Image (cartoon, rainbow, N blue to C red):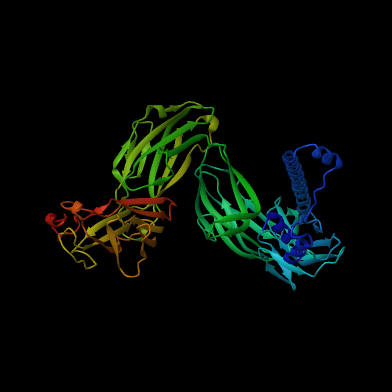
Length: 640
């Protein structure tokens, strides 16, 4: 079937197309008789018969070529103009009021009309509303489906109608929402279906949700303060599944919330906001930063997809507070490029800075730095190696105070500090490679550095002014995770068999065992991955039963999906152990060697307390069973 015939069937249907071709002799153009003008025939008579036939053939070919060219060009123009005008048989309009209030009930009329001179059949109207919209049907608000469809009766020429959609659209102030629609139809004399589309934009000019802050206007660096966030609904309808999200400025350390947050330290689930709903959330924290620095806190009311963490705010508010300029400035930092997380085995170097912000000379200035363990400042957990403490520039450690002290008796530059003068000191120490655990007191540890500055010699101009100031900085302690792996034959939770030592051409089974130990913080999303070498086979035996140790034959990948691992696993509680069986049939090339049983294994996890991603690795395991005490060196290599 030619392209032209296919187009005929598409536009007119199979039966009508055949009738049309039969009436034309099987061709669209039918038969055309060639008639030459008299002048051509007179000239033709003067030529020889051969020449006359050649001229006749040339003229006929030229005529047909010209005719075919005209037909192709004309047909192309017809097809172009016909198809380009499809959709003009109907019109579609969405009527909107432009500016709306989030959540208000409104009616969206969608009008349609048959603009053609033929009946439109199989008419269907579809409407797409913004995500999260509610539609009202039978006086009940329901969640809008992805697409609303309405079947419409056949439309006579000039006939029109209206479909009304009652909807509540949600979003944040200033956000633009789009309602789109499509009308599908089939002209009575055609088989193909066509469509006409329309859309209308709605601007959310008001959100009937209110959120606001109550913040101190000025805070001292290191000061622990209580803030509050107020929220209320002035809507006429409920807002469902509402969340409150707070974004804190850099330098703010969250301490507590009342009620406590549901997710992390900054997200509260508020449930359904009925009309007139109001409430308050209090939170406490410590703030640090540069003197005079503005700290901005942002609060938002909206919806959260807990599975994807996608956040959509309906109403937001920003509150600000300012770091006060103190007469005597003091600050401290941990000199390292990473985040404020300390790990077991770290070497810590702290820098303590000071500055005289007054216009007067201050005499006999002293600085103190205290290192404390949280959540129990009086805990003697021993995570910090106090014996490794080193202090510069004449500073000393006072064990009775538990503080590093720089005083004018040992530091000459502190005897007189001129206006605007500043300086710095430092001290260092190590953390233990393995934090000692004795109970739940040693979970979710933090190191708190508290630095203080004061002056004994206060000039008369500053009499009555408290020159002392303090700053507090906290560093979370990341959990120590130990991941080990071993290959076994006899000392194994799974019974093995086969030639031992292994022999060329004979099958021997081995056990691979993984072990996980975790110290101070709970872990989530714990998973171990590895792959089998091509000459090693999975035996479908795992230990203990029920553990999610799986093998993918197409990739050779082995996974152990552990999930959560509690703090003190393998320290105060048994270690987490998983094992599986593999087999080896050595080849001649393996003789005298210790073949690899398992490629590198990688453990991945997330520290719930610090949020840090953890990666641990175990190198490839071979038939050298160094962790199996019941085997000897002579049994590790392949025999012929």
